[in-house]
Amino acid sequence: MSIHSTHLNVRPVRAFADNYIWLIESPLAPNQVVAVDPGEAAPVIAELQRSGASLAAILLTHHHPDHIGGVSELKRLGEVPVIGPDDARIAQRTRTVHDGEHCDLPNLGLSFEILAVPGHTISHIAFWGHGALFCG
Image (cartoon, rainbow, N blue to C red):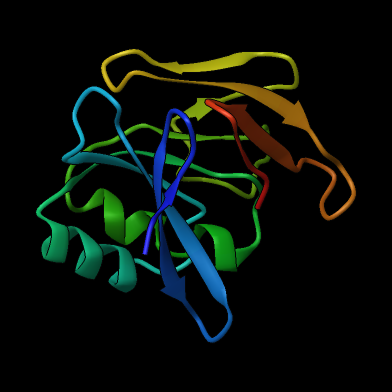
């Protein structure tokens, strides 16, 4: 199953008992994907192997373990940017983004506006772009 917006192909990957990790296909290189909130590595790795895709970046919306728990293991597949909010509890983050900024991944043809959405957590952010919202 995949979800098609006017600009993105997004694949849900089942995680835990009742959650999803989203894989965003690069519009420029469909064999490159960006993982959103990979709480578990195993389902992402299985989908990468099944599809022949490779991981190009990781987007994180907040610090909860069911959203960041798989990052360390996924980084063992290769060094990729890990983009997330300014929160010391996200040690794997390689780039910090703030409300109103743009998160550009030009080699992938992706660009997202960062929206602060405190409530669930104080540092919670969402990624908005290409007609899709990734809000964790």
